[in-house]
Length: 280
Ligand SMILES: [Zn+2]
Ligand SMILES: [Zn+2]
Image (cartoon, rainbow, N blue to C red):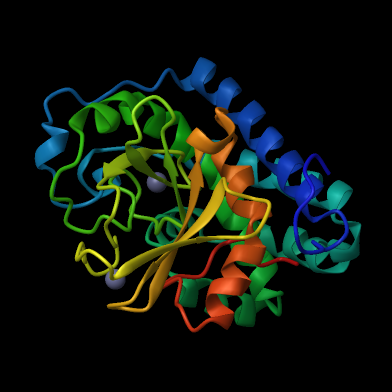
């Protein structure tokens, strides 16, 4: 573990997610070399009214995904041997999967599709969903990165739904305050896209009334904060770079701050969405 946290995280929790991210990074780099994804230039992304992934024509190659999936099962077998029984059952069943549908339903975040599929083949639904989701992420990120700069340049705009990613549509769980200028950016754990929102603003209900958004942090940790909205009783985790003068891996920052999620929920605030880190 690289950082002490105020609550005890399950043994190996943080290490696992660091290994997971590193596996995904490696896959992403090799995909970029092989697929050479190109940006869709005909599109004015600042005017898009739904996630870009629904609009642009990305062909997630089925063979490529199947290879990623098999490789991911190997990674999981090594790193999470306690799940080996569940993983072996998935490995046996996967030859019968309808892969194009799996890709489609993962991008749509259709959880019930995976519950049904798990029922059909007697698989653990959580493990099935986790493996399907995390093995697609390198592919999504290989395309998402072509637009990273553009989202940052757009600045604050009236996003249709500022709580979800303008590239892949996934719900965000964390934002960061940039050290240089105090601007605030939401972060997507799925595709690593960032988009700007106002500093004192609730992404869930658009509330910006003074006094109705509280910022809270734990003693001895001024960098990791909770933005609490009194209007809709929701929260957003936020990493404030100005406190440490350091940028951090936002994916890991989100994973290692589950204690903030627990704290917010304990106080009656809602995160509005489940994270995909629920294999512990
Ligand atoms: Zn995204
Ligand atoms: Zn709110």
